[in-house]
Amino acid sequence: MSSGLFIPLPDPTSLDADAALAHRRFLRRQLRPAIIATLAVLYRSEREEDVIERLCLEIWLRQLDDHIAAVNQKRWAEHPEERSHRDAARLVDVRREAADRASAVAPLAWSAANCDCVHGPLAVMSAVALAETLLGPGESLTALESVTWARPIRTAVRVTADAGGEIRTAGCASFGTLSTSDARRISFTLEEIAAAPVEEDVDVDGDAVQLLLTSRIVRRSDRLGYTFHFDPALTACIAAARTGAAPSAGLSLDLATTAMTNVRLWLNPRLTAMAMVDVGVRSLPLANPTELLATGATLEVVVDEDGIHASRRSGLRVVPMRFRFLPRQVGFSSATYAEADSVQELMAVLHSAE
Image 1 (cartoon, one colour):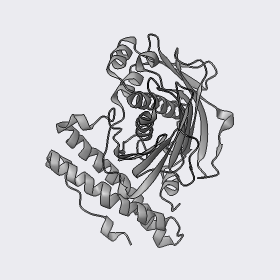
Image 2: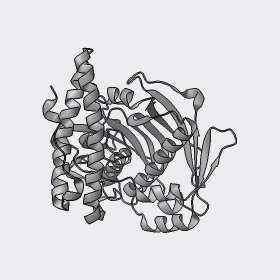
Image 3: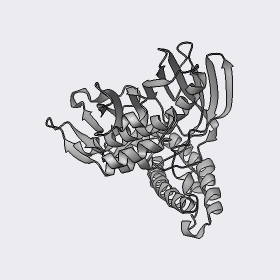
């Protein structure tokens, strides 16, 4: 079934920037979707030969992803502007369907931070960018009230934003709600476009990574979390360079999700796999970076050990967490993470037919 999916891969260092881009697009547009489609069939079979074939494909997919990462490094070495997703919330085919409703296509992008799903914060950035087109004079977005990643996203999405009320979320890969300074609520949905597989790659937000790497990290007295004390000089530089609701939302989410991933791994060293499915965030203020990263800013992350449970949707283990940016927030934002004890278990969920 899968013999044609195993192909020789060129040495990434032998590719110039244009060849690296073309090669990556072939892998993203054709080879990787074909592997995933084959795995979806194999996961439904218990025949011994199919189990062996599935294991071989799982190993091949991991090797292919390592190869794509090496190709990215080659491409980014000559085109560093493509590495960051700070301004990658691109919207195309924007349509104003009514006074309080708009839609657009968001190409999205992969990142090494997510296992077989597009970069989650980038998906939210696209929704925020579209919601901004519905704002009135002097109105601004104030909070991400909620966002849920219900299913793995591997394609471009049709983003819909509606300020007139709730919109249908059944069958959507991701959905959520934003609030505005005029006390309005803007709902949004992301629906996958099957014929448009994601082909671009971006790195995790470099500002978020640097903020966390240079933090002074202190474990809470209850042993259930950590506080990241940001470097004041670095926060001032980053805050001065970041403007706009979408990039600010991306920075907040990248900081929070990366910190939560690390905290969970520190508290549970046996954990091997987490993914952007069965994941959600609630009550996240969309603060201006100068407020989010004010002098003395910290990020506190807490794991709710008593609330860990199995997901009814995917069967993965769902871990409730809380986080807050001080001094900007008084109360906590909440989040849920889905995790598995092995990459094989996670892949069986991500690649099974839905």
